[in-house]
Image (cartoon, rainbow, N blue to C red):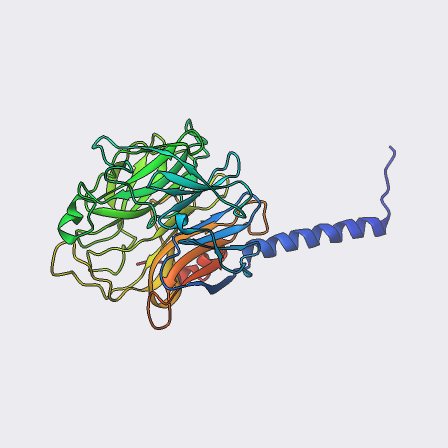
Length: 380
């Protein structure tokens, strides 16, 4: 029998190369990291998305900053007053970035956020006749960025969380019981948008949604009327209707013991075959009920934190504090797979050492950081 011989040195070098590659991969998978910095002054910071070229874009009204590594960010760029009141979404089919306005237009970028053009759009109201620009419009600026559906029969659909301020379009306390969350979706790349059926809990407003690997959509909603945790509902038809609403046992909605919730974020991490979700909100026990039902209490907002679910939102056993201090609104994004930012989670949040609205910050971390010291971080 004839044997093939391999020179000892060549074998050793090949083995060494393989070991180094495996070591680097293990280091990349298991090394936790976390860093944070301020991006904007004052309050705001409603959208953060990953462009198709891998760049991360953080929006604050008409201001835009971009990053390719998560640490260094471009100077603030004014993209025009028409960007105020909009929310962002990346069309995964063609790479276009859209800033949608409920006033019946959008700003579109075909070059990963470098230049923007204004286009008119059509918004079709819901069954109550609400949501059209010339009537009671939807509001999108205080909800997390939209997504392109990737699974199921509605693959390619653009969908964005939104809210409606009741039949009078008023945020006065007496009208808050008539508010409800909703969504906008488009099947033609953003030319025509349909307002979905209402989120099935009244008194809601400000939200985030994310798609799971089975094509269902997980909708996380703030609520203004009663003391308790975050409301959740599901869609099994691409966001047209929302079902099975319940109050989550694990996730707070602003300071506990208050009915005045807070904008939070939720994303599914792009890990094939898994439904790992990250949620962001405040972790404070200082809340109290307002004197008037639906009333406003912004005091004692603090301790922006993240929670992790390893089972698609059924349970949330792990949490990690991001910032111990005054803080408020937050939303989430993640680095694009295949880019330099792959594996990085981005949390855009309001906060400061002295006041919750001192500035808009971005925290960048990975799942390993969230899971670090897992035993001491679990909720009880």
